[in-house]
Length: 125
Image (cartoon, rainbow, N blue to C red; front, top):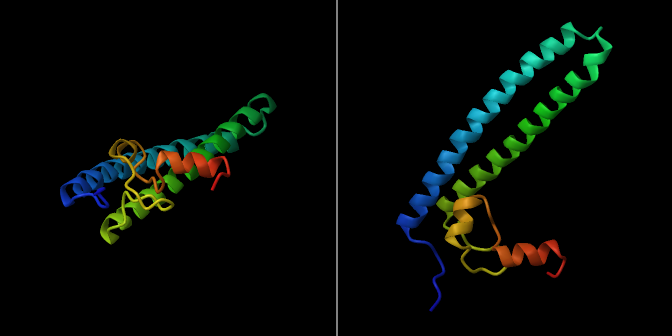
């Protein structure tokens, strides 16, 4: 009979991995905020220098895009923690089978197995 859930010990390991990622992402967001604040200040102070204006604006935009992406990832990691509490973590939302441990360690917010993620991407399901 195929295993349908991860053990408490396995879930604890996944939870520790997720908490570690959350800490890392939180640090990244803080660093980007700090960097983008100083870049915004420099941009506003130097907005009369045409040659730097586009480059600085682009850098500020990249920082905000990165921060947005990191914030979305943080939200998805928090949802993964909730799935651990709910008892649904690691179960493919399409097939109902377990997502591989390797995938969950690399992509802790995964909700689909690799096979079904690819099938969905190719519009096969």
